[in-house]
Length: 493
Image (cartoon, rainbow, N blue to C red; front, side, top):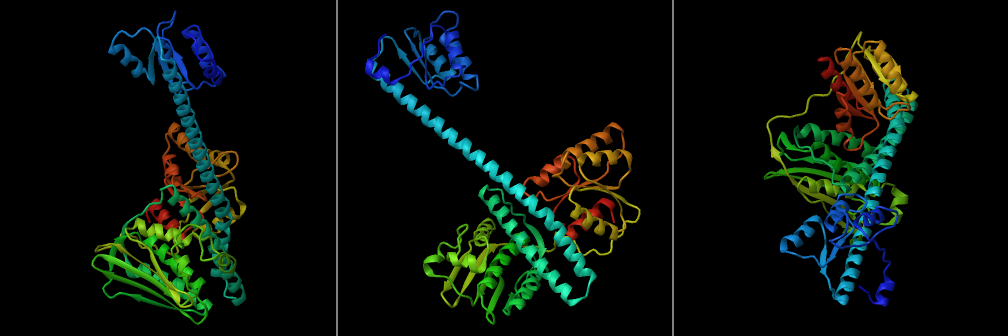
């Protein structure tokens, strides 16, 4: 068979005189864009070659065409398509049709190959971004745990006015940094579709008063009046996600405080009507230009670039709030007049309930005299902070600086509780946990509770630690109320 010389010159054609030779070439270092197989060949026919090609990772995606004079029946043709062939040509061939299809199939294959490579790169980038966010979160949360922890201890242990003032400045600055990290992590979860809504029954007055107390103090610092209205018709208990609602209100109030001048007012209204929770935050601030109003819910967008320099922030708060409201079943809206202020408002469906799912977390002065804890932590500042907290509760404390040391100490001592960090040199927390559980199993000894106390706070981390055999999980910075709840559960106080 002779091909037109012009057409042939455009193709890099590699010939094989048998099925075995074809496989050797296809599996070699040369990239093949199309394979044209005869069916009747010595030693190994075209069907056998095609089956092997389609079963091997390197060649399974290469398009295969059959070129043969051996058609015997429809079943014969079907056999080739079942194997994975894209087309058949019978001899003698129509040269124009043959070359046209070859060019088409090669283009389709190359486009598909390019698309797969782009997908692979996108997946690789997404993985790298997730790893970066996880590492960034860990590296910032770890020192923040010690900073916030020691600041709280300073505030508890002194009444000296100047010291308390400095401690509050450090506390507020650290909380601001933590809020930035939380915003970035939430935005990443939203991007990947992994941000969850956890609807529970909760006491409305209790939860909304927490917001009131927090932001009244912040407004007072800036000389702003915060007026809060809780509807008389607001049910005592409702079912929705209180954490996310408080996050939305906090974002809206933080923005309002940021853009409102001294001696002005901010209004928070929380109303209930016909199964809907209606919330609005209105301020007497600088307002938003009309042409900017439709873009303010986009990520990283602020009213103008100067606001970033003047007021700070990531530009993620409104974007995250808008998505949270959507996940809760509503839509975040805004209206504003330049120089007169802005109002952000939304309605979400809620269910009236008769009780709360939340347990009372105001537990003070718990004492665990004689209980022995192994604290596995490589950061010296966090070691010092946790020692102070645990000694206050009268725990007996051992410290391991990495996973290997933790396993060795566990084998030599009896502990009532292990607090396990994850990112450590020599051996991570998960590996140490698996080694400890294996030692318990081999030696038929009762299980020692292991609680992850880690700066790893990306979605899925909790599940990963529990799957490894840990009994519970806490993220840094340490939440004292949660810590006390876990201790109560472990020691059945």
